[in-house]
Amino acid sequence: MTDLPVPRATPIPAEPATSGSQARPPRDTVPVPLPAGAPILVTGLPRSGTSWAGKMLTAGGGAVYVNEPLNPQRPPGRSPGVLNAAVEHRFQYICPDNEGPWLRAFADTVALRYRYAAELRRNRSPGDLARLVRNASMFTLGRLRRRRALLDDPFALFSAGWFAERLGCRVVLLVRDPVALVASWRRLGWTVHFGELLDQPLLVRDQPAVERVRPLAGTHEPVVKIATLYALAREVSEALAGRHPGVRLVAYEELAADPLAGYRDLYAWCGLPWTATAEQRIARACTAPPARRGFPRFGGAGFTWTGLSRTAYRPMDARTAATRPPTGLTPEQIRLVQEITLPGRIRTGARPRDAPPPSLDRLTGRRS
Image (tube, rainbow, N blue to C red; front, side):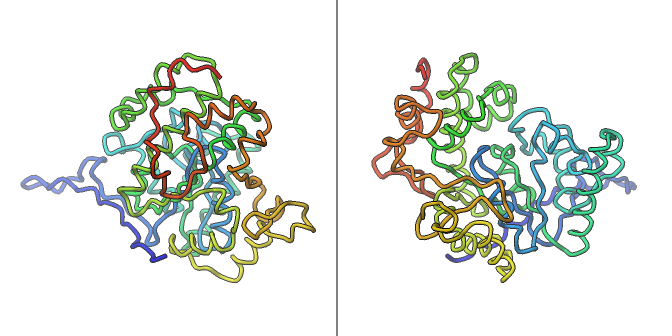
């Protein structure tokens, strides 16, 4: 695959100085310094494999792994040393109209500048201090070694366009099979609180499809709500990838089927050096003869839970979903998920030729 040019951050124009004045322009117009190497954002819905992908992309030593700075829960979120801005929502939406504090905070994060004072003002327990030492050391060493920042953050999904356009990020957007993702959420007891999206007017303005989930906000239908979030996220993700060369959709199952080839390609696309160390670590973390590890082959490669990443998931062949229900979903629920999200496996940048885009309007009133 031909590598695409690394996008550069859009500079913030400074206000022209008034006659006889050399006053510093307002905060929101100060140009933000960015590192020479483009940062990387790995995002996608939670349980899409973002942590695994992020760990594998840092296996070669060319990037520093930054875990979920936009997560509203601590840990890993609410750490001002890592991101000195107040996260108010899951899936916090950032755009040019509210970017002031976010641009400065993330400029520090992607430049690996740790904010000690901000962290100590907020978090001072023994566990907090241990995390401070770990994160500050990681940032400092990464900056001294001129490594790039890699943000693993599912909660950046709806703001991925801003990260690409304003911070110059290479965005790797993971997409997992919908049945597997919904089943994973249900096993963990997760559901969707659509108020987290609907309470953000700028998100509703820029992504009108969000408004169409409002009838589900007060319901107690977790399977319908999770599948609807999936359909919404895919609609937004495909539109973003279609218009921005710095955003790439990656099918989780395809990456897990042949991780060495898949990550070699992703390293090239992200501009990361593919080294012997990266290959060895990824091979040790992701592949092994199935007879030894006890896992079936997927596309010629086994998949293990050991090694560098312990956050990966066993690949799931979506073709078997209808006949072998994932744990936690009934056959009826599987059919419902497939109806909401379109049946069949999600493939990178592709949709079945005769399939229409997912319609969120038809979900109202369905029961799981």
